[in-house]
Amino acid sequence: MIEAIIINGLISGGVYALLAVGFSLIFGVARIINIAHTAFYMLAAYFIYTFAHLLGLNPFLSVVLSVIIVILIGLVTYKLVIDPVREHGATTLIVTIALAIIFQEVMLIAFGGHFRGVPGLVSGYTEILGVKVTYQYLLTFGVVLVVLLGTWALLMKTKLGIAIRSTAQDREVANLMGINVARTGMMTMAIAVALAAIAGALVAPLRVLEPHMWMPPLVTILAIVVLGGLGSIKGSFIGAFILGFAETLVVFLVPSGAFLKGAVALTIMLIVILIRPEGLFGVAFEEER
Image (cartoon, rainbow, N blue to C red; front, side, top):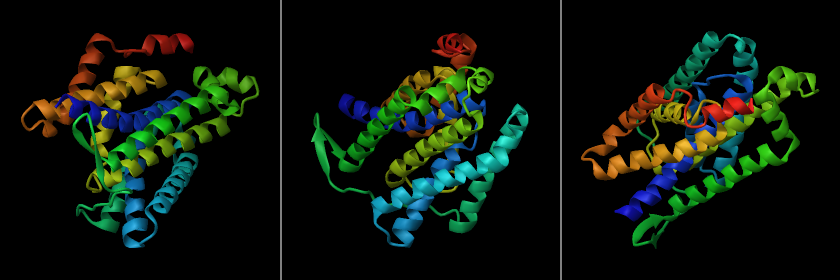
């Protein structure tokens, strides 16, 4: 039981970390609360279904094509729809909600409301600590680790990472120092959408696809960024694993716990707002700014 909780908690936390880090990145740089963030996750899953199942392409090629297409969609929507109203917080929030609903309705029209499935990239299983773990789960966790480490290296070791962190700390000073703030915002959006698309690609073989699948993870991601501190990358990473393990514990230990996952995320979010509104790392993040 304990081994199964650990394994499932790590996988859930890893996928949540991909989504939450991307959400925090775009908020930190562009000050956008992007409600449509998990809709890109849904789009990636449906594109994989289209390429792999309907068109019969190689599953790995389908994943690559899906991620690229979703990144392009994200950049186009950012440039044409989000960026022009970025300075108006309430308007931006409404626009991103509208985008998410538009994506949902397009998928509903294109594929209907029926549940869809995507075959796994790899088959078979192995035993870890006496627990049967499919190779698809191991592949998911491995990709999550590689992508998160790559994101950390990008942010900490490259010129683009310096530009992103500088813009997140103070947009005006970064602009005065010669950083192309607009281009940095576009690149940050590309990274954030790429993380969401990769998460969708990893989750697609593990669950059924339907047009409303972006909503449950959105609730969880909002809870994670509140728990970790809005805009804090470190807080999003740690908060993702806290929520991942909390949900896994409820699923394994509470009768009908699978139906309470959303309630767990909302409860944690409300408790954090009441006790420590800035989140676990909100104070440190403000000091860095």
